[in-house]
Image 1 (cartoon, one colour):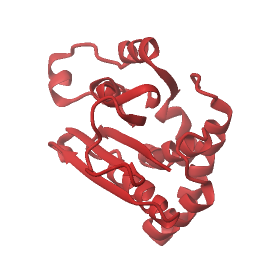
Image 2 (cartoon, one colour):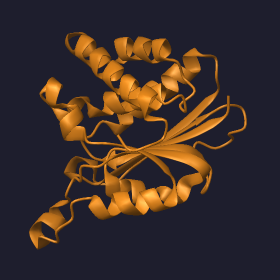
Image 3 (spheres, helix red, strand yellow):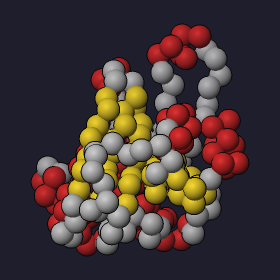
Image 4 (tube, helix red, strand yellow):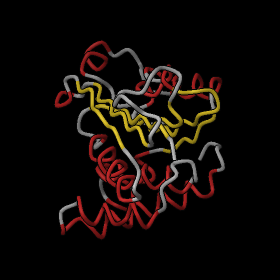
Amino acid sequence: MNKDILICGVGGQGTVLASKIIAASAMDMGETVHSAETIGMAQRGGSVTSHVRIGDDAYSPLIPLSSADMILAFEPAEAVRNLKYLKKGGTVIANTVATRPVSATLKDDGYDGSGMREYLESKCDCIFTDSEKICEGYGSVKFFNIIMLGIAAGSGRLGIDKETILKQIESKVPEKYREINKEAFMTGFAVGAGANVQTV
């Protein structure tokens, strides 16, 4: 399997954990994996981007432009910002809920992410989900990163089976949060399995 996956969001959304679970899952399947993170002011809501390259065709941890098979975007503006990495025919799985940076809050510029969704829909195949709605049953959007992994796996486009990812969740998540994270993953998996690259 050769697959390039870019995960993007802002600090505090769990993008790095998501990338580590994908990388570890692929390695568990016997694949060669390269990964890297580019982290700005992550603790202040700055951009966080993780590159995961699976397979023997990758010689660098950073995904070249127009090469990513999939972008997992935890924030809609970050999806647009990183769209240059997506290859023709690639898929974007994106959160529709905007995370307003401090600068936007101070200026009250009206950013709500809706324009980002429209732009993405005009450019590529997308699966959209609302982090607040899908996380209602879990009491916190902190589980959204694991739900996003589930959507990616359930869509069939990630190329990693659910059992392998569940095994890595078991390994990398603290014991008291394991079961709820596995439930969150399966919630996302069901959404991804029914999405067939459409808005959800």
